[in-house]
Image (cartoon, rainbow, N blue to C red; front, side, top):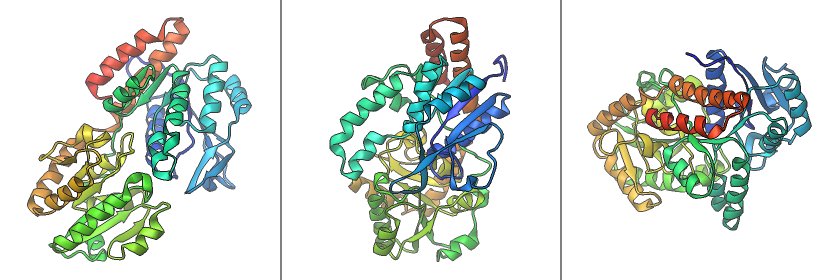
Length: 403
């Protein structure tokens, strides 16, 4: 931890494991990493089904929540403003990180401001992009304005990529800084490749597996993933197409594509085996703020085909460890997937290079960068100085370090 003092850090999130999504995964690493660095983390999240009949873990404070329509197993927290005010009066944090912009996140931001506690918000989900996939395109501008109002009331907004920081800067968001994402290279590892699993998928020894991991949902551009997979099945020999994940589109798509394997959501070592047992990772999403699945596939030794966005833009180098496609060009995406699958030895070499890239993306360095940002903010408030200098200095260092 160096010279950083021990902090009491409030973390507010509407999603957390065992829920399965990128934000929950990031929150798991954030809470665990800050705790290992010696800080006292006060986690506030909605009560989940797994919490029934169990006491909350130490340092975790559960609030009421309701299911998110269309997202089975996920909940949003209720706006328990007064409960948070009383909690933070009793256990006052030095700084608060609000990870989500739902009802609980809004209540937490308001309670932190009212309590005069420094607060940082996280921009984890591009809700304004999601709206276009659910017939709500007319709401895109109001959603952006609402998000801007929310984040600009905090002391700083953290985003996972430099590109997203530039986009939000241009849209009028203030004090936007980069908090990157890491990947667990011990869990996601080429050594977990499983021949028995590949045989279970019906893939011969000399065959190839095209893999997708993520939500089976419209905002993930899942129809394009399946269009590319169908082209692979029709034009390449001995190809199996495997989709790992669950979501509102799964039942419909599973009926429409019986020659593709929909294996459901996986976690932990089981998920790691599925990644490592693939040969080409096909990921056409255009709504990611980062896309943890991209770096997880790379860490597993699997070359990636993706649009030139988010994590792929940050870490994929064309012709070396994967393929990038101009954003939104579906025909080029399918053609690139076909080209990638045409040379098995090249796929293997690029998968090895992807693993080498991922080995430099460990979570420890990322969490240390976040620790420094939070400590700067807490010290500024205590010293009564302007946050701008501390955060801008930290942002410059973060950009040079990829944090």
